[in-house]
Length: 485
Image 1 (tube, rainbow, N blue to C red):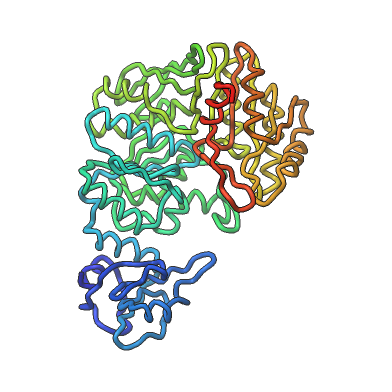
Image 2: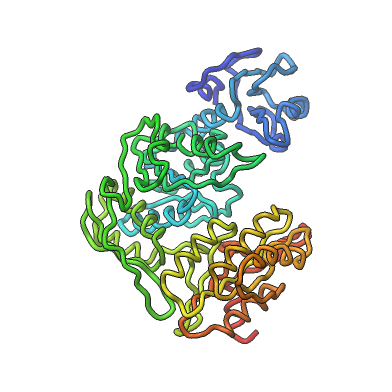
């Protein structure tokens, strides 16, 4: 492939060499460079790709994409751009033949609800006969191929590679989670989303390696509404006006607000043996009754979002309702049937905000007891431990403090930190460091009408101890406990 065709949508300066140079492949990892490669010098938080120029040239790289002048042999073409991450998105799109043009692309951003909504959308569209690719926090799904995720939103090159594979596999559309980091680092440049969804925003991901403050976080999230054709936004979010500021898409809204284009009315809690759910009436752009087997007000928002998207795909009311009934997400309020007497669920809530939201929702179902089992990750902020301890102490009738991913710390030291937060409340607790023993305790001591939450691990199927990951899937642990192992 000629270099000039890879650069066709970019502004650049050719510092040396020729844009007629033939390119064998596009690489941003110096270890993968081979004869004839185009190498993109990415400036990361820890490593600067410009430092690898002598190494990649020695391996045979013939084109360098840079943000600053570098020394290179005469036979190497050097292209200067303003931002190499931005350039990588467009170069990758061109390299894979602009695959997004062969798919309907749906991007979902927001502090909460991204993961559940992507699976709901996939479920509804597949129920209506579409073939749907997915890119998210847990995994990427391309036909029968499942690839575990490293980031919520992969690097732009990987996104374009996935899009290409999806188009080749016969997918009609792709639904993907779009993180604020992904938007900030231009991972979703190189194409325009057909639909961009903004679920909500709350203070999160603010810190040295993420966003400097809430305004920066909101600004990055809102970039999606400048990178899509149709924007679908939660009308109830208190930051709604700031979210839509400067949008370049046509706009639709959903929520409980009378001003929302798609509204939920008459919401009711529903439940049965071992499950919890919610029902409501849909008004506005569509008019029908909805019931889903996932509890809480946020489940209404997630389903509203999914319906607002799928409306554009001419999906029938029957298909929407059927798909919402079976849409499940691993580790997101995932009900695991262990008894007709009480309800047990697994959820990824691993910070105070998520745990508070979850426990507050579950209290609305007036359980006999709300039991919360959780631990906190090692090598992470102690503040999170204090906060999660305080939240569980205030909201749960019984907290079972256990281990999560202790990493390089001692599990007991982490538990002791959680207890500092617990001490601010009158909450009852037991501490059982071994997670399997803790889960067995929760199940064997379950009382009629209890809701038991295993929080923090969610979709994860490992436990990280002293730099090593050991297999540990809570679903397997539960099955073993029930089998008496």
